Structure formats: structure tokens, C-alpha cells
Length: 422
Image 1 (cartoon, rainbow, N blue to C red):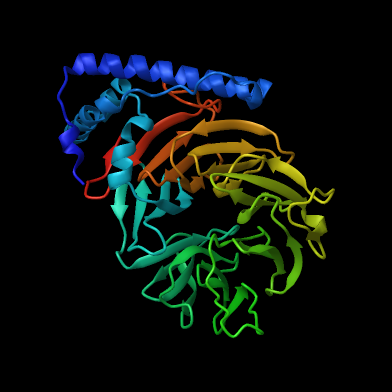
Image 2 (cartoon, helix red, strand yellow):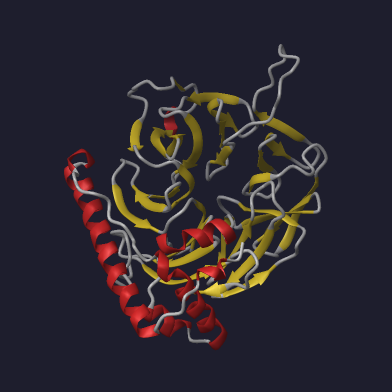
């Protein structure tokens, strides 16, 4: 769909004035509402949600953004037109695409993929603000929890390397799992095994074996179907534990060989996400209901033999967050950073304290953080990647959130368009 028919050229100065006046008003009102709701309680909020009334300006702003990219004047444009989310919903629906499997390489470089497991994907290297396409046959990219091991699935073969494009550690010619759409690809820290997450099952891949570790086969059911929804999994940073789950299963705790040693039932409707803290002292599991969810934390000392019943309060866990449907997350030295279905990213401590929140909009599908934990890249289904300098101060008065983060730029990767910087 070509959205150019929305265009109605306006005087640039008048356009800029209206964009900034309404944008600042909207962001201020949203931030005030969020502050009130979190401080006093959302049940006490009686006002109407603020509205961003700039949809009619979107086509002209995009036209000027394209011109700025062509002429190399993006910095000036960014100053005059701070970015937004709501006015461009029509563009996201028509041209947006999922961005995920984001991994930090070094310096200012990350790697990522566009597309979902069931689509033709494209891998890219983002070097500074330059978007460089990689081989079109790459299906999936993963990175180990420690030791800087990368895994690339290309033409039915997984190759692990020491560092990005470094020395080859191992190669795996897939047989049973060849051709499956990969939700996540996680190499072990030594590069000798792979945790492969797909909607047709979660597999433990070694040089000579492809063992399905989830779901557990129902041998009594002749019509048993191994396909799953909301498939999710993670490794502990020391690779001692494998966590697996899906819409119809509890989060199952497996040892390093894939044998179940514990089980954590969902406290919302459906298991959706799992992650260990950076020091492996805690496991968090998220379960969702529509666009909301509940995240609980469990001490890793209790994992062997643990049995947490679904939908029951227990001293075996603590509530980490009671609102987010978590799609992606990472662990820093101090806290978790989680991305949700509404387009929020939040830093949350292992005790369940929200340290900061930052709104970007639409479902968050990818996160990558620099080794010094000062720079965060965020990808969403808008077809955008946002590069944030954490704690460096808001760049403009249109920012929604209390994280005090500086957005250096956002890369726009819309279908049918060349990459644009804003």
C-alpha cells in the first residue's frame, strides 16, 4: 500500500510549529499520567488518556525526512522534528516489519534480522549508523551467554565461531530440524552445542544428534502433534540449566543434558518468556494474558526439584512485574531490561522494583546492549531500531519515559524503502 495519497504539503515552518507544540503537549501529559498512576495507583486515575493528534501531519513529515536523508541533513531535521510513534501507525501497518535476533558485536556494531520465523528473513550488520545487508540465505543468528560465541544458520547448516566472523569452532549439518523456522538460536558457551527454538519443538543440537527436549512426547496419543505456540527458552549464563516453555506447558527446568529437574507454572494465562539474571542467582518467567502479563522470580538455589503450581500464590517465588507481556529481555549487572507488547522497555530489579521505563511503541522484538552496558539498541515490529545512550539525558521534550535516555538515532527499515535515519 502506498501511503503517499495522504500527502498534503504544508508550509515547513507551520508544520514544524504544529508538530512540536502538539508533540510536547502529548508527551508532557502522558508522562504526568504515568507518574501519577505509578505513584498513587491506576485505580485512582480518573482522567482521559492523552491523544497524539498529529496523524494529519505524518505524510509531510515523512516527505521531509526522506529529503533530509537524501541531502545529508538528518541532524538538523531531527532537531526540528523530534520523532514520534502514534502519528505513523498507518505506515507501520503497511510497511513495518519485525526486527529481532539482535546481538552486540563490539564497538558500535550489532547484527540483527528482519522478518519472522515464517517469512523470508534478511540479516544486517549495523555499523554505527550504516546498515549493511548480509548474505540473503542467512536464516538465524545467535550469541552465547558468555565467551562471545556466535552461531549462524545458513543453508541448513549452523556454524559457531569465536567472535563475529571469527575462527570456526564447530559446524552442524541439520537433518531433522532442517527447514524449520527458527524463533531463537542459542549457542552454548563452548560453541559445541546449540539450543534451537522453533514452533515445531525445542531441540538440543550437538555434532551428531538433534534431540527434541520440548514438548515431551505423549506416547499414548496416536495423533500427538509436537507443534507449539509461544515457544520460548533460555540458557543460564553458566549453561548449567535449560529452561523451556510454550502456551500449553509450564516452564520446564532441564539440566545441561536436557533432563527435567523442576517445573514452574504460569501465574498469568500462558508461559511466554524466561531469563536468568546476569549472575545466574535468579530465574524469571513471564506468562501472558492478551497484551498483559505477570513475571515472577525464583531463586536458582531452588531449581532442582522445584514444583510451582500454576495460578497459586507461593513462598517459592516473588512477583517481579505484574503488567508486562514480555517478548524480549536481557540481564545487566544490576537489573533486567524487558521489552513488552505495548512498546515499553523497562529496567526492573531482581526484587521487582521498576528502575526506569521508556516508551518506543509497538511490540518490542529485539534488544542488544554494549559490553559496558551504556548503549542499548531496541528493535520493534515498526521496522525501526532505536539506539539509546542510557542515562545521558533526554534529547527533546517529546520523550516518553523516566529513564533519562538519549536517543542517538533510529534506523527505519520499511518494506519497499531504503533505510532511513531519523
